Length: 295
Length: 319
Image (cartoon, each protein chain N blue to C red):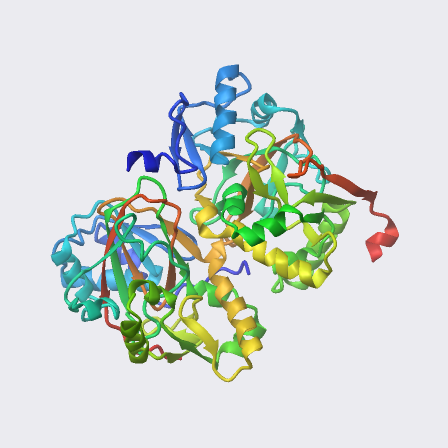
């Protein structure tokens, strides 16, 4: 469990190239997370900067930026670096278009997003988002952090017999009760659940760019492991999803207005910490389309 | 809205003269502008103690001037410093416990310090000497907000429950060290039997403890729990997991990234903590002072009791 992670096999790491370009890369935790300084993500990035940003993201899994001047337009532009924009499956029903940024409000005005369990975004889709970008507009004075947990180190820390057991398994992902809080009319809800009846993904996926193995089940959307008796499926899912609670796999980020997190939605899961009472909190999200997760 | 924010359990007490910066919504605060020593005046000591009870763990940066003697002198302002009941003290100190990664030691499982005895320490003061470039953080959990966050039926159950705590447990199983080499496993097992549990302690504590200063209730659990009184091992394990997961959920947790010279001081009566073993072969050394604590009191007024304190004999050693 204390084995060092192998860094992925590029001869020169993105961090080293960044250093030469005057961009500071500060590792936050040993297994994931880096704060990036000296790269203005609100401006139009050069090709070199764009390539670098992608490489840094694959390497560190989640990137943090402080005091950015990102607005709706520049955030959308930034999202396109990682793929075409996608509208959230619930927001789309309210007429939100793919190219719109999505406000995630909570606090007294709307508490639908107050706190979440561990999840990667929209794994109940056949093609979950590849990358999500979240920007803080209003931050509570205390609390309301987002925690990120790595599916790469979660997988690496599993005992060999468990790895062997799960490498060829698939699991079913479905929208969970979170949707039921946001969609209040029963008919609309039935319609929504018909539209997203669930999808099967490998329990262990290979990252499309780095080839690293990722544990790909989450406690919010993963309902069962295909082909196992119910009790066995439940036990195994409990063991696997609990890997994401281990602080060894976690990095935690405190928001301030202007703070931005960009995460690789294949490599990490995230958790909205509900410790800020009634204080207002507003984040704005942009997501990029991804491909089907594969083994 | 402002007065609502002031209702955060972890908000700064506006009447405190100290420069206090809370870290999360429920636990942890950095205190700035205090140089720790054995010479602090009584008023400052009182304010630090109040901040400790309120924020559960308080952090002081830049205390590089502390040596062993000054560390112990500071601890003694808050009560009688006590050595660990079984582990020898750090070289050149009277009470300090050495936490050094070169010994392969990182207590990477959630616990409250020394709960295998009845009057376990009320506070622990940890000083960082050498820290890894990245990794090796410590996390603390607020066991009072954990209690408050329990659904009412679980709270009712916990209110009347007692647990047996012991230092005599299977170290490898507890820490999940299944990938240890046989040599490392033997070394660790020997240390566990011959040092850490050279005297075997078993103590019965209430699962809900009433804080002697604040009167707040908290969950008293952590990795020294062997089983609940009156339940078999199987039921105990399941119930322990349910209650313990309420303690360690992210809402109750603060995470501290160490710099050399940092001091963390936690209220060991209202927290659990755990090291994060992600620093591989990087060196990580810390030193800990502990202050003698009160015997825990349950809601109904009953108190904890140590039911076994027995030197390990050769037969037990071979067992």
